[in-house]
Image (tube, rainbow, N blue to C red):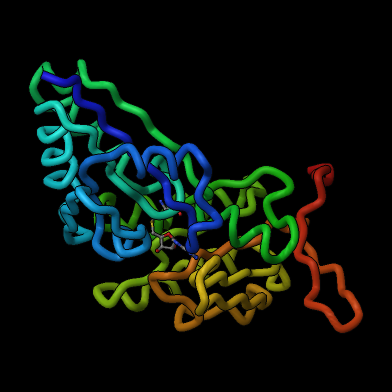
Length: 253
Ligand code: SAH
């Protein structure tokens, strides 16, 4: 039996030009593709390549199905938006391997990185992540909301710029406003807040507002938010959007 192989491939934030060449190679080599339906739709169809789309909430089930398929001898690719290791499928697959049959540990596993949303958003507006930063998912599907509140407070106190993934959902419409209120208690109201929506796609939209004006309705699930540190500032330019940047040196405490 042919030796199976599982690629976990990052598609980047949007269009194919953001794909790294190693990801394109993996997608051509795969006999079967697994992933959330909208991500699979980004990949041009290829004859003989099977597709196994799934719902966004079934990550562990999807990971197990792809692993079982690869363990049967096939070359399988699991796709993720952005980078597969950032709030995405690589950790779900490894979680399944940790709990699964011994043969899954023997599989040839290749994780192909992609451009994660915060880096695409940062590049569109300047260099807001030019100094120390952290990334926080605001979804409370996999952790209690109290943990998120604590991390927001401590990250703000520590002087990090912050990138927020999964900022809102229908199930929790008010939490992002609560998050901004927590940050306003810790940070100057002038700190720039960047809302980068659908970056790298045709409906991309960028908006920068001071923390004092940041509101939950400015984001949806396709938005990655970057909140600056107290050092983050705007460099105005004539007839062009201001550059948002965080200087490489931090001030003395
Ligand atoms: N693995 C992905 C993140 C998955 S979590 C990555 O590395 O980018 C899903 C969240 O990612 C969304 O709620 C949003 O916050 C962010 N996101 C994904 N694609 C985006 C894009 N094109 N523009 C802005 N944010 C995006």
